[in-house]
Length: 468
Image (cartoon, rainbow, N blue to C red; front, side, top):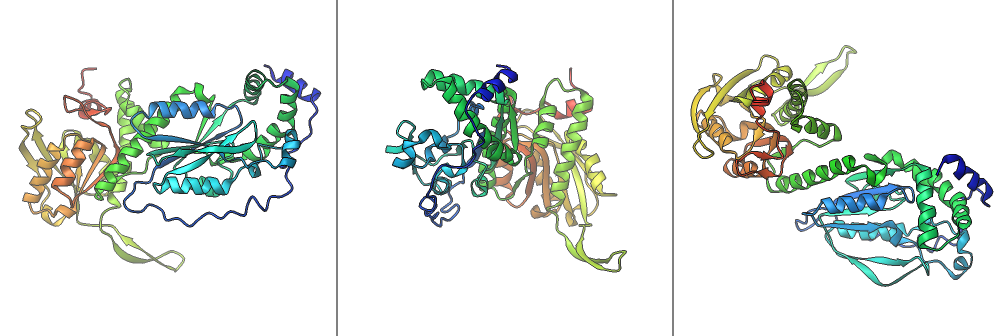
């Protein structure tokens, strides 16, 4: 349907700009108070909460269904904002055509907050079962159990800041207004038996003004904006991968407090996508690997001991800051670990870097054959460099050598780009006092002990010695 045709239909329909709510008594609806609840107690893992907003008929439900379908190995529940419409009074039912269901005050937000808070605390809740024919909640209510992932979907789920604060990820489904109107006309005329004039009256009187006044302004709060809704498979795939990664990282970080995963952003996810792509050129692989390595190194340096230091600024003022750790060295596990040396040198001027070479003869037959360590390594903090933590056997060999040379376990920070859960378990259980800093935790290892999805043989791709 073209824009001109839609505008002509709207002009011919009886409609005025009315974004207010047709109710007389709002005080009774806002009288409920959210009960005080604690956050996460008794070791319960807080769920990953996703908010999905957008205009009516924008494709929100399709996006939610696709996310749920792809998160097959996780427990996912969907909570619809529409379930929390207020029951209409008899007076409101008599003029229901004048009631604005797209206004924020049409929803029982206090009840929504209460239910969401209970779900986040691991408690089952009864979500209202709203009947759109009677415009009242009916029994039985829908019981929703706590889950790993909670998706809260609705046109105005970003409107209240208290609801937004509960969300780990906010998605706005952005679909052209003509497409949304065409979908609404088809849905309401075919499924609900309404005539097109009534649909357009409602659209021009309530739906469009409410979208402009209340829904569209919340777009700025979104972490991700999905154009074309459910048709955008690339965006949905990236979102699902991000959620899966965060869930896996959450588990391991709870088990091992010495494991640190740098905060994921879509900039970082984009760089991971490039270096994991088998079609990425060597030049681009090196460029984006170096960017990620630099981020990991900077994060690792933040875990070093610091001393307070005061300096005089050019304005004559005193600034109280910190002094960098001076007794520091880097140790790269040859060969892949050497790719991280330039980033370390760029961050730490004049740093001494040693090397450890471990010959691999099968996964369990590793043997140390060479090492060249800085003098007085036992008195230094050590940044151990290896971009991939797979089985953990090479890391165990290298760390064991450092301990034999007198390095304190708590003085070792192991830096890598990606880690397999198996390797994390091996290293953290064997050496609970070292710190591991990584940018992402992958799903696991395949039968050849390669990280999956991984990025292949990092050293071959970085130094250009692969077969491609």
